[in-house]
Length: 99
Image (cartoon, rainbow, N blue to C red; front, side):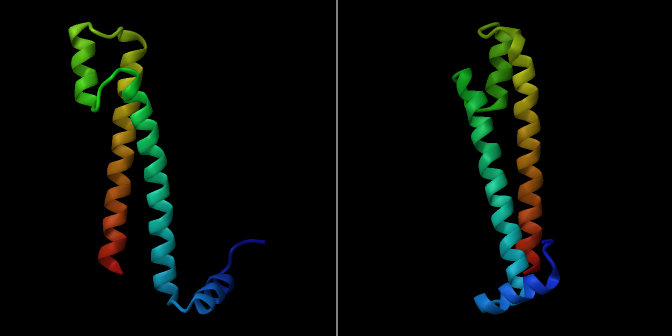
């Protein structure tokens, strides 16, 4: 069954919150969970190299203390994960400001 506005209204009524508050809370929970998963993935990649940031990994690659392959690909992955986190943070801030 597709999620309809009627279902959302019923859940809002059942929980005693406004539809806007329910929507904002739901979006924030979704974004927090997505960010948590991305942060775990980021940490997993960084921990493979014993570093705590993309900059540290980049430095190790340039120094030759880690093999370029697959470190360059992992560095790109970490940078993309960090960009996704930044987008989630902006979206979260927008939701919090509007509610």
